[in-house]
Image 1: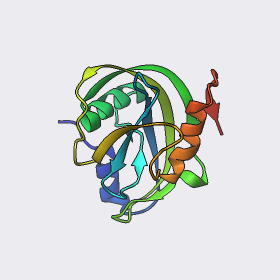
Image 2 (image 1 turned 180 degrees about the vertical axis):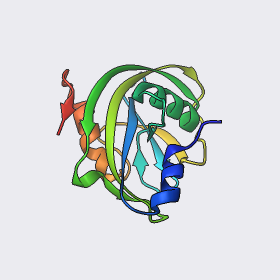
Image 3 (image 1 turned 120 degrees about the horizontal axis):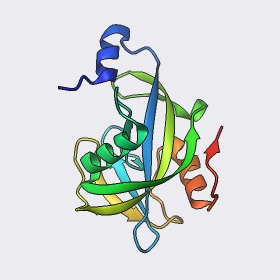
Image 4 (image 1 turned 180 degrees about the horizontal axis):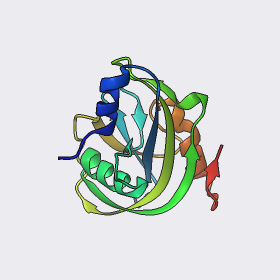
Length: 156
């Protein structure tokens, strides 16, 4: 059984702020609409993502998390950007604090059926870039970069 690193670490530090490295997926359908999920914890929309666990690469995390949260199999195509900063400081509803560092990857769907997992996302949908639902604030910059068409990865 794999140990959930964050849960294990939280047993020692409680709600203190931790660095969390996450991987997030930018997925578009054939019509150019972007896949987003409504998070169960804050009811705002965000791309599929998850915290990198011990022994995982960001790519492995992303493939695992997208499958768990959406039912889709994906192939990681390229890094869009690496993000952190004040807008990536986060307090979860249970009081846990995090400073998130997120790697945002463009992905291509290779199979599966779109189904919300109901634990992380209540709903899933594809949205036109000019009509996104209410987004997690930290996702706005990431999505803007993904939609900008830049070839090189962004970082701050």
